[in-house]
Image (cartoon, rainbow, N blue to C red; front, side):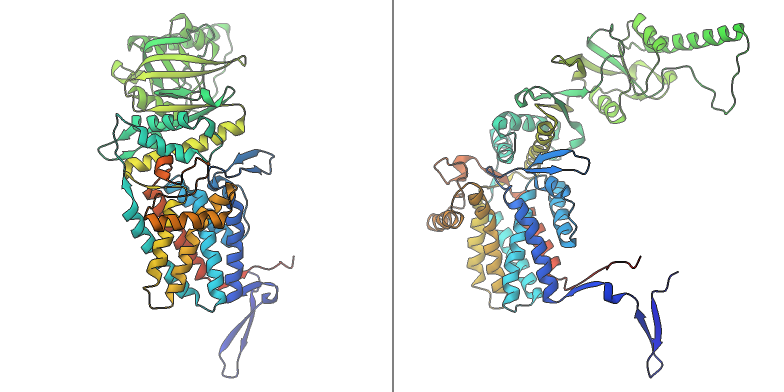
Amino acid sequence: MPSVGTLAFDEFGRPVLILKGQESKKRLFGIEAHKSHILAGKAVANTLKTSLGPRGMDKCMVSPDGDITITNDGATILSMMHVENEIGKLLVQLSKSQDDEIGDGTTGVVVLAGALLEQAEALLDKGIHPIRIADGYELAAKMALEHLDKIAESYPLDLKNLDPLINTAMTTLGSKIINRCQRQMAEIAVNAIMSVADMKRRDVNFELIRVQGKVGGRLEDTLLVKGVVVDKTFSHPQMPKEVRDAKIAILTCPFEPPKPKTKHKLDITTVEDYKKLREYEKEKFSEMIKSIKDAGTNLVICQWGFDDEANHLLLSHQLPAVRWVGGPEIEMIAIATGGRIVPRFQELSADKLGFAGHVYELDFGTTGDHMLCIEQCKKSNTCTIFVRGGNKMVVEEAKRALHDALCVVRNLVRDNRIVYGGGACEIACAVEVAKQANKIATIEQYAIRAFADALESVPLALAENSGFSPIKTVSDVKSQQIAQNNPRLGIDCLNTGTNDMKTQSVIETLIGKRQQISLATQLVRMILKIDDIRLPGETDE
């Protein structure tokens, strides 16, 4: 083990370890460390600020391999940015936590955290201790969350009238690249969630919803399939392209004669031996086909491949088959059709077959590509969203946008309370927190007032991205909110002529907004408590 330092003794004989290489290590402490953290946080937040809202700009990310991603999803941008700074990495994780838990609001949470750090810088310059600032922020966040609960409204969850859910999904999709077919995509997301939602438990199992993409066609060609779409085709070109009332055998065993599971070789020395082996293989194939036919199967889906002979035998016995279907797809087909996955031919029986009313091939233009669609399944609580787009980037961005919309509708199923978007709830909370700050006798009131100013960063960014004068627009809306006591007034980003977000149907989930404020405050508190940072210096090698 290399020496890490020198052991010395002072005049009283006490040992002192003198560490090597301290002069090459970089160290920041005290106010310098705080300023460094705040600068890093502001830099990351300012990168995302221009992507906020329906008029937000997209970012083009190029990977080391040359793959291009165009997106305005905060979590995607930050995960691809390769942030080196340790505080910047915390903001990346913040955005990821919001994405994992809520699915939407990943840009807003980083913008809010950046604004809180910016306000903390001014307070540090005044000489206020970081712990007092952190405590003030905690108090202010509590006030803001209480006020959010007061201004929240309950949304009816009626399966016969899905318009409220569609309006919420449309708000999420408004800032995405696919907003030209916003209504269609929102309806697809709502119908997908409603087909798999467990209304008794008020929960949604996302594993039952698959999002598949295929380059080609237009975004408007995107459709919701109440079943499973698999990127495979029938194994033989002469097999029928459509099967009605399919009884499906789902196999994970290879369609070939059994091999001896030993290391020994089998040497064939005579023609007779070769013919015997040939007959044995043929017999085994016939047994397999017979066991499938006896079970009443009229469609075979196999996880493994099979050779031309097996393929020919399946065709001659009028058994359409699909091979090389992946593990997740096999499981999805089993769930949808109510079948059992069969690991051995001997175990195949009629009660283990899945049922689907309609299995057919989808064709795409002139490319010769085919996909298999399994519809009218026994258990109709599985679905696939099949996304089309002009190129790979559009398809991938559409998938990300649909994921956000699905998450928002799922959150409404869990908790049907909503607040109004467009910066309306942030302004309402800012006004309330600033009012409460005057009642605080201790020094924390400065931090609480700063928190109120930071909350306005979201409406300011929305106004700036929409081409308005940010300070004038936000101050006008703020004065109207106070005069009318109306927490629904926000920034009119789309120039519709009204600031009432209820009229514009700009709706956000309460659970998502609460999470944004809580996560941003927790992270900023943690950053403010770091006052010493040590970085490894250059090595001698």
